[in-house]
Image 1 (spheres, helix red, strand yellow):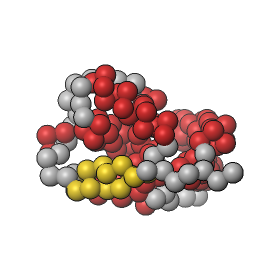
Image 2 (image 1 turned 90 degrees about the vertical axis):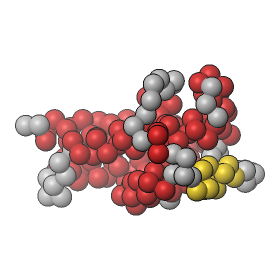
Image 3 (image 1 turned 180 degrees about the vertical axis):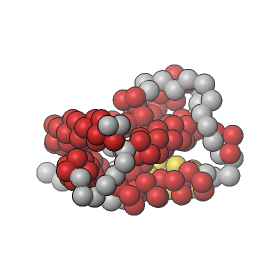
Length: 169
């Protein structure tokens, strides 16, 4: 049974944030849409409620529309978070994307990637597997992919931990 196409949400992104997301999507071998969905989902895992100001939040008045397709479950989560925080949905998503882009940049800066090291190869494989499963989640029914995504996230987290420990040695 084919799932119905997702409705497009017109997310209005500041150009500097769109550039960060484009760069991270390229580095992750994902579409911009898949990267945004992944960042938003991760933000709710890390921060069920965002408190206080977010770095870069003051520069968001200049925004350009981006047609975002997201799973209905994520849309509901965004709506609930927006209602709880008092921010409009677009601003709630921008705050989360800013926080996640900053967190991802810090994580990647901590990992010293050397293509010849075994840990880096394993980390790269785990990252590619995680990226593939995220793209599958975005393009298929979420219920069909949740188990695979969970396993891929655990594998990537384990490889990232190994890589961090190796880089601090």
